[in-house]
Image (cartoon, rainbow, N blue to C red; front, side):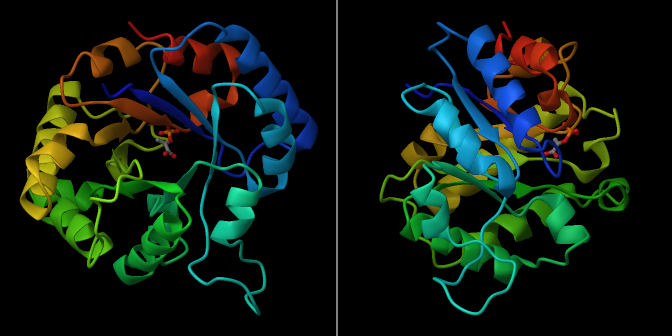
Length: 250
Ligand code: PEP
């Protein structure tokens, strides 16, 4: 049994009061839905308040990043134990905005994944090619490199749920969704790679999410694809109605 995941990545949006309103609205609208996992990833500054609202609820809390060191002189950074302290279950790692704008490379991402797993935080490990790489026909090569290096020397057989999000960079925040059949091909490729690197069972169990301009009007088609196990949603997760419509996909 692997329930699909709909995760909302709020990015650098929502102050504490807005986060409170959004969380309360979502809690109200998705009451009674128990066949899918919903994850909210607010900015760090709203995690505490959102974690209070989610106490004893089925919606899970996620962070948008962590740092790979335990503690100490790392100004501005947030550790894995700080996130577990707040009740986070998930953490997004390797988002393309961090790879591209903040220059995070595969080595940093690998360290972050190791640190998350050490604290039993489930990574939502983002991979995906740029528009240029896709035009050059290199999408599989790029995603394979990101996965091999991101998961280097990592044993995934110790049963902390691990999630991969395939997010073609050219589809993020652009309104340019990757055609669902195209996304499905990439998901099949990723699952095959995980099976090669680990085991068939682990690959089958792993949830592989799609991300990139997911909206209420394309979610149903995306979720019909057999290898798409959920979505990581950016822009459309900032509004109660649109996020809840996505959660209620059929
Ligand atoms: C994201 O940031 O992970 C994302 C998929 O954004 P959007 O849904 O806005 O394209």
